[in-house]
Image (cartoon, rainbow, N blue to C red):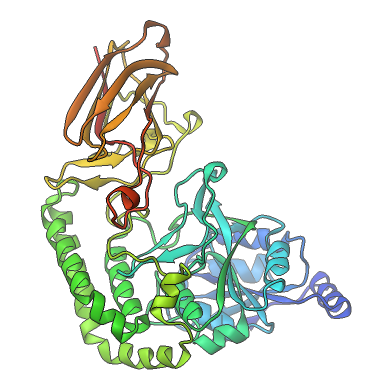
Length: 508
């Protein structure tokens, strides 16, 4: 490893002296970077502008091939630069930064994260009030839309699937439950170095992703708290480094999910869930081959990526078994106790609150977000996501592979017709199977139709009120008797559902 320590400017020296004098804790901020020349400066500038002054900044460059190092040495000489001799991946780069950290409190940032100026101050206050907190998650909003949540801490279920709470929800409308979280999104989090060392740091075989979910899981089972601090706000450009549609992500997500479960579940848990997990996995492989939501090439690519992830875990089982022994030595809470405190969700399925990693999804839009182009038909198969407002769940498929989305109590979408339409048409595929769905369709705040939908395919067609014509048509679906499947059908689906919609369009 080559370590280059940048020149310390007078301001940082004064900060260090002040921290020692007033007893305030110093913090090591670790930023992992790979080819981030274009996005890293915003991250570092936000660090330099923090209201809490007592910190050191370590940038671990993971063998970048762009001009990142040259830029750091020239423009950011106040950081400590650590250069990996070869590309080790995000997880091991974080471990390298952890080794170099000189303080008990260590914050981890992705190079595409930008901090609110009070972020560090709020994190220090919060973790200082909680002696048993090993990791603290922050509120992470999207860089491109500060109204939308990226993460409020993460959860994991019995199938090993991890997801960010509140992702794609409006921040103003989302009230995260006060239960225990499994992990903190490592794009912007803080932890205690001594506890990180105790639980073994990040799993270097993961590279990315799931390195944060695995770490938080181990932190929980070792008896330490993983907490969420809503007062510390950061902004994140989703998958700016890895690429959201990178085909390799399918393989990495599934590979690391399987290893996480193999390491962290107790033997008794495995005995209870392994059959269901196997059926779920092979069902996903089957669906990948027949899904109408992907091209023929992408279907086979997904199938082979899933098979490759399974094969990797078989080939590397020896390493996983050794890691499992270390986890067993750490354990203070059983899997049952983790479920009881909410650190693990008691469900064995693909979480309905997280987007499938190889199907495109959406971020809720407002009128101001729209790309003003004519569109008079929204089909859940195609790229309609840019015209969906708040109130939708992630895209999914019926048994016959018709793409649809469930609404919540209210769901908004936008249509921009070429010529003045006469009718609004809504095609539905699902509703409450016990009671049906009752509600209204509104166009630009005018009621176009009231409806009662049973659990089946129906087509609602209504005349658009004459006084509601505009350039942009806001269509709102309101369901008066939205329901919770977990309560009415006694399953693991905790969403609040209105009606399942496959198409919405205007007609003349």
